[in-house]
Amino acid sequence: MKIEISSEKINPFSGINFVIETIRDKGIDTLIDREFGERGKGSVYRYSDM
Image (tube, rainbow, N blue to C red; front, side):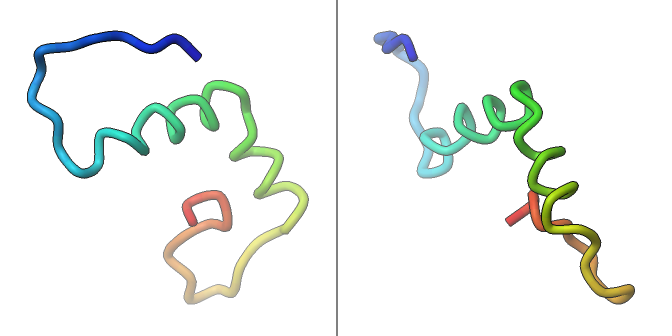
């Protein structure tokens, strides 16, 4: 992970965005869904969304 100094405005959610992006880029979300399987029929979210 590289740390950069930025003059952009920081919001409360900016710290987690790079983590979510990395999880998706590395395919970890697919691994989670494959290992845990599908949730119930009425579920809107997948395990990897949590």
